Length: 235
Image (tube, rainbow, N blue to C red; front, side, top):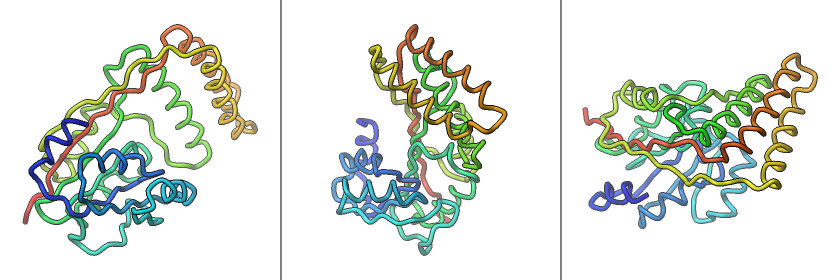
């Protein structure tokens, strides 16, 4: 991310906490910008953390939720959260915890997809995401639908953070092959099988055919993401 690199080119970030790190993919992105930074990644899912440790053995990974960070105040120079806001049971509690463990004058980086002003190919991605999130919620897993861009910025401001910059990131549209479409359909069917005994099963099954049709017609493109860099205000 060139804008990220430009923002931090004259700033010192010795330590950074990545919240909801998953398999560590955003740390990999940040390492291209922050060359001399010591990274720590936290996530409540042990399977994801094990995958992250294989890819990034030099990074410390810990099982932890964003709502309750087991670190002293002012431990890190910065904290980040990528593609995880919509998984949070309490966004403001997580942001407050991230603020607490970041030193005054440090930064929070938010990287999150949004659900408004999307083209038809991106709407396909959103529909697939909402399908998965519905299944998760039916299984008692916190997985919300996508925020709008304005809602993401509002959540950051609500946390008392000073937004320094916000920019969009897009990936290219792809024309999926017949094999790709079949594979994505099979993935959705597999996810749907988790709720085969629930009353919502048959209605959600219809959505798979709608998504398949949209994939064939519009192609596939990841929904746009907004990257927000905010400053932790000094007391």
